Length: 346
Ligand code: AN7
Image: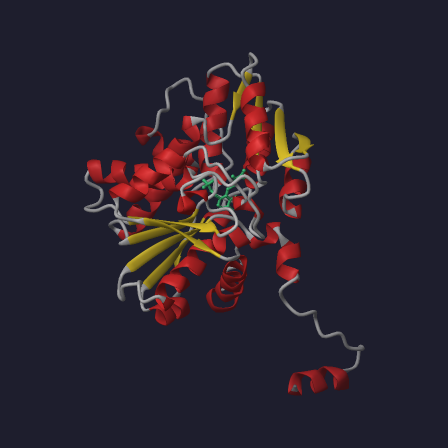
């Protein structure tokens, strides 16, 4: 059905809002038996990578694009580390509006770049980082007829609240902890707002501790100051000056949550762990929460028996380069059964 049809009654939707959809949302919430056992918790993954463009961005983008059209926009613009651009380009395509996307040149995963180009967006590579590209996009959007669809657009965060609604609808109540990767800090703010909204209308009895994980080389919310030259293998969260920092801080403070950082090595180890023990191949940024939970476990700061949900924000297939650099090559053999049997015997 999609986010607008499913949850429109809880969102700023009117009869005039175009009913755009790519059937985003309604993603699986899966239980990880092996990893839960290892960590001594009940661990669930919200598979946002199962959205139509392979990331969580579709939930907010559908609403941002629908409202932009409702309000008379003639073109969309965004800056992106990759996933926002893929999502914006896809919804622009289905809605029939032009879309301009600004990407940090050379720092976007291959799959995301392919997506934006295939959906037909005008793709512009900026020789600078994401923060700089976002500044440019915001300025350009001041021109008449352009709608900016980054998470500075409030409808993005409204749409992304629906992830929290679905978790509560599925579990029957909110989890104890909710863990997610933090880049521009929109998603953690949106989930917090969603959990609060659901508690207010008595769909849940509690609000989880909001646990935000950043990459060590791009951790402005942990260090409490902007990071002028963010660097991490998790290019999705290679962001030094998050626009929703104030909202994210509020989410963490009000829930007694925390921001923490994990190294690139920890992120990649978590990516292999999630794939090989959980059966889910998520992109590096999406594995920051699991890396963070493992770190807290090592430090003796992960209470046993709690229910934790983590957001698997993007699909591992978007960034095959990073994956292939970590794992061995296939074992190549000739086309004889003897060679195959020899390999199988080890
Ligand atoms: C896979 O696409 O900012 O903290 O421009 O792609 O809400 O920014 C992506 C962010 C986490 C961080 N995981 O979410 C963009 C962009 C993945 C992401 C984040 C992103 P926010």
